Length: 201
Image 1 (tube, rainbow, N blue to C red):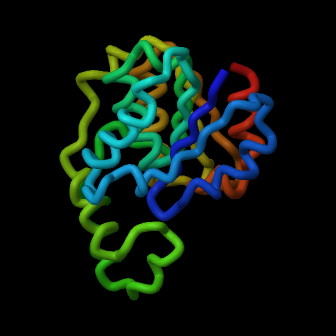
Image 2: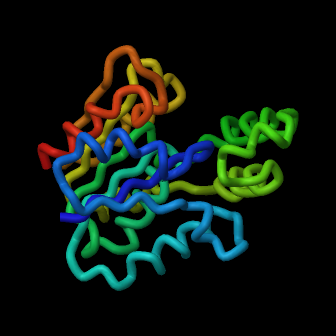
């Protein structure tokens, strides 16, 4: 079965490399999300590109996303229930905290442009993307998700722990895994925890 990995903001597809090495499934896909936008560097632009990328898929696949990738995964499964066999959400918000986005954008604005070189997205486009996510809220549509859901959060990921626990309550078919001694970027610092969860599906 195909496994699709969606990276977070500030990451690229390369950040899934170690996870895929531990994953038993041989059919894995790690799209570069910011190359899917066709010049529209907004959340809706990325989502549209993601939908086009997998519109020809006929067999359900496992969809795994971290942070921004997790938000996209949530949105995707709500829109395309028949395409997703199982969902894996890592450090994911289901209702974007406006204050957090605004604070993040404030930090982005004072960071030098060269700091964004490794992100695959320019400083201005990063700010534009983050701003376009301010109103996202899937609270009323979580009940539409019928597939199994695995929720993963790092023990030190304070920004996403509450949302992860709430998701676990709101999605009765979900399982929550708290990974000890690690923060937000679990795909970098505890990749085996992700691959182990996927291998058990």
